[in-house]
Each structure stands twice: as C-alpha cells, then as structure tokens.
View 1 (cartoon, rainbow, N blue to C red):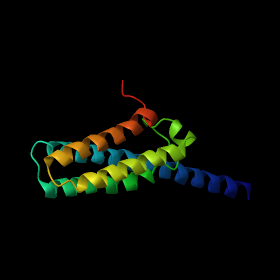
View 2: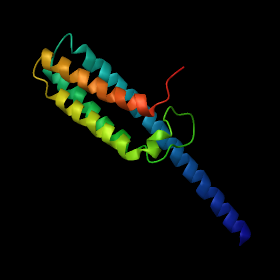
View 3: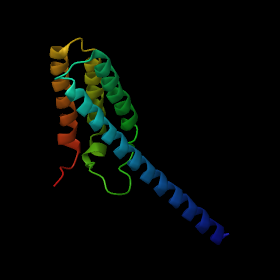
Length: 138
C-alpha cells in the first residue's frame, strides 16, 4: 500500500510539474506572438492599411485574453515574471484589461493619425505592465 501511494504521488508530481512547464512555455510563446503583432501594427503607423490594423490589433486582444489565463501560478523554469504578479494579482489583471481595451480601440482606428494615437496608448499600457511585473533583461 505504501509503495502504491509513493508511486501515485510521484506520478501526480510529475504531471503537475509538466503542466506548469507547459503553461510557462505557452505563456512565453503567446507573449512573443504579441510582440510580433505589435511590430506589424507599429509599421502601420507609417503605411496605414485599415484591414491589417484591424487584424493585428484584434490578434493582440485575443492573445492577451489567452495569455492572462496562463498566469495562474509562476510555474517552474526560467521566467521574467516577477513575484509581484501573484502578490498584486488584481492590479495585474486590471493592467491586462487596460491593454485589451487599448488593442480593441486600436483595431477600430480609421486612419493613420488615430492609429498613431491608439498605438501609443497600447504601447504605454503594455509598458506599464512590463515595468511593474516583468524582470528587466540584463
């Protein structure tokens, strides 16, 4: 019986740590995708195409909605996420909501001037979260 409990615990622990690693990996990949979408959106501030703007800003909003669910725990492995995320989780979610709103507003940009203004707001919103909740790269 004791051996079965030990084996069961070991399997549970392995599954738990694998799920944590998967969540962290998914989180990193989505954040990289958001960065790629931001680069495309930024290029539109110089060469505006309403269709591209709408698609890329919507991609950002959808990715942000997805990635915010992947911060349930810090996870295991190398991460730039600060412990402050889980210490002030409500504030973290509030900043995520602000970024989602900013990306949705950017998606509705009708011309280059409105996109420039909306892109600045989105960039500041993302930066606010990164300043408070992300470890700076060395």
